[in-house]
Image (cartoon, rainbow, N blue to C red; front, side):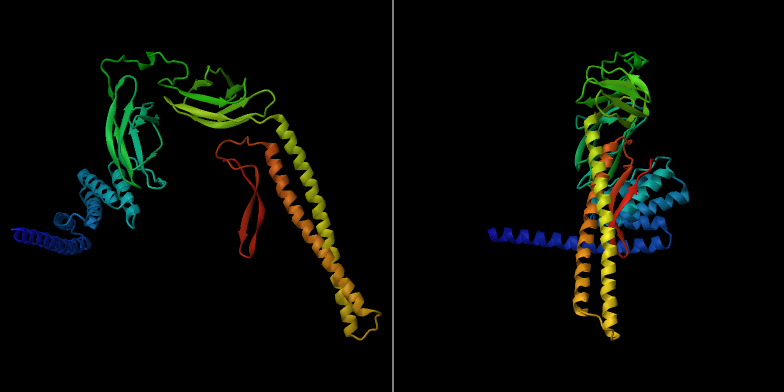
Length: 418
């Protein structure tokens, strides 16, 4: 009985294996016919062959890629939106199976082309870090709060959010509207869009602005900036206008990009451009520098500048003396070759070369010290000037390594505002 059962199991395994091989072979033949019809621009026949190949063998992901391209071509040919929608669906299915690969960027381009044809905005190109995916959350209402897995991630409109692969719960809510909740399966290296259309809450007042807003809480039409600074008291100005801070160091302001300036007695002024978004709280960390630090930096900058200048002058002078010593040795040598009688010729040639070598060492060391002192001077001049440029702009002066076709070195780079 046991032998009979084992024989049946073996036959079933062999039968299923044989069917898998046959299905793979059938799918391969159908894919060949799909490619033939596609090259002949017979898109309907090509689509039917690719779909049949997937039914025969669901692991043929190349069929998904062909179906995405075919449906976009059918959409351009017929103008029917359903083809563009099917193109997006097949491309997303392919990306789930092949998040990284030769045709990944092509499929993302197909999705954006179809979205553009449907009148939708393109998905941004995001360089996902590590094994992560990205969520693009769009909402028809600005200032709505977005939470992902019960963690607040900002308000609409918002930038793409990178999340770990797997299932995530997205909730979007705003006072006066019914909350919206959905689940999204995120795939590595893939961008997922969540479209949200909030519905008015019939039980809420028509004017949500009538809802009382507590200190430090963003209103519907304005945003909140919370200043974190170790020094106290501080004075905060936005676009030159003085602001009154709450107990937690925050203030509300109209949306947009504004210049925030923070001052305190005995400290340098801090200034940055800050983006204020309605319905969101923006935390701004401020680190003020004491005046004494500027004075110390200036002293070191002048000292190192003087050292750099003195050693550079010494290096250049010794370099000239080195060149003169070796020229003298060469002249004495040529005089000897011409047969001129010069007393102690060998001794004089040796002394000239020795003196030239000595000047060479002094010149090299002086130049090295000068470059080191100059780099230190630049560092302290930057420190003395302070980091008062708006966020995102390069420093006013920086020392950076540079490569040339014939070598490498250090150069000064001048940064200009955008």
